[in-house]
Image 1 (cartoon, rainbow, N blue to C red):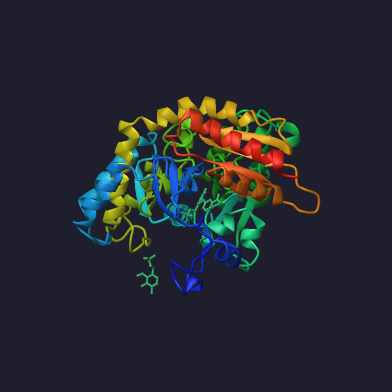
Image 2: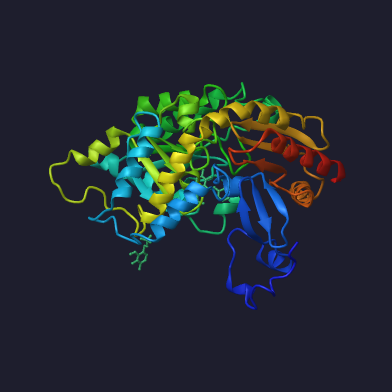
Length: 442
Ligand code: PXG
Ligand code: PLP
């Protein structure tokens, strides 16, 4: 494995790496130089099974020829055109395809370049929507403990991960948080949705009692919390959140940056759980990770509130230079075609049973206190080593890597999110490598 950046550049510090222990990485780098299907290739030619689909995004597997070819063809064509009072055909075609794939009621697409931008876009649309309808007092935003909503100031303000927030000042005012839904005592080793916890949605009712519905614009949750360690919603929880939002005129936003485009064995979590939010935010799997792109998709009720106004000026003062970038649109159209032609959402739903069995086979392995799963995501949680919280997970991930399997460590847990093209034997290999690693972790 590559152990020095000196063959790559004599200025490794020029790259300030995101979300990385820069000095540790640069002393002992891990470089990938290629990828195909469910595998990465390292600079020394080793094949690594990708248990993370990149970073929850390469749903159709790496280097898919159809997506690669679409990108190459577009690179030879229109390079850039703004979507501010201009356009190009692919943007309209991709928006239409997205709405055909998603459940009815999510019918209008606002393009962004990332999940973080999708979240900020959704929050801004929520505020502007209420104002548009003469309810300008609805300005407060509700997130949830342990929520991950990207790194913009808006998304961070509704996120619930203290270490992500701590260093960045007061963030946006007027935000509050629901409790998270993890309860290992009640729900350890639940398969799919835990039975206990629907009542946690009633905390929203309590916030309404304190703040009054007329001050609350929207609630944003990940339907299955991903980054924090895979928390599937308790049975009935999302339904109850929907009911409370509807009763009080509060918009419900599902952050589907991870759960969108097949990972839940459906077009999105809203479809998988049969609960229709007012907006969803997406990114990642929309282009199979091949070109940055995100999208915020809204209900007709929201879109029409902006389009029914008396004047025909700009309806929403929001957008990004690269909204609906031609290269991203080409990648998105090809990706959605691959999902459909290869039946990958259906495939994910079918193989999810094997995934679940394999994941839960770790019950009883050393240190394992919980396994959580839904669709093609899973987390394995460990008891912390006394005095060294989190270390077991990073040691386990390192040992997996030495066996040629890439998994993502978090605080005392391993999260998994393979390409939807993963084979059963590869699933078994992922969990076998975790089991073997745990045998060696103190
Ligand atoms: N919302 C959710 C639910 C996400 O999972 C974002 C928004 C932000 O997307 P962008 O494209 O701006 O990164 C995400 C991203 C991890 C990890 O360690 C998760 C994400 C990103 C990076 C790392 O699990 N999710
Ligand atoms: N900063 C400056 C000075 C800009 O001119 C722009 C866009 O025109 C931005 C930031 C925002 O960039 P983007 O539209 O790529 O998000």
